Amino acid sequence: MWIIVRFYLSILMLPMLVKIMFSPAHASSGGMVGKLQAELDERKELEELEEQGKLDETQAERLAELRAQDVQDHLVDELTRSSNTGTGV
Image 1: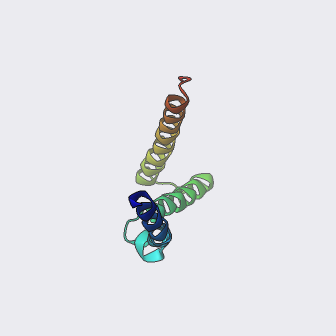
Image 2 (image 1 turned 135 degrees about the vertical axis):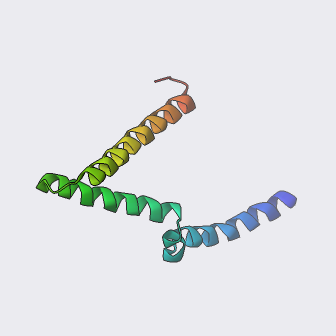
């Protein structure tokens, strides 16, 4: 009986959690979705400036940081995937 109650409550909470997570107010207040979108937008803008040759030194450093973070995230994803499957890298 207790398992049924917990399952029912978790189903009721799921839509509320999704709504909170993807709401614009939550995203603009530092939520993960808002942060990732801001970094994506910033990277696009910096890459456009780089293509035009209008990138200054601090912007070039920031673009290098964002690219390094992408590489690091990709490696973490690969390691996580390989550890979950047990195949190794």
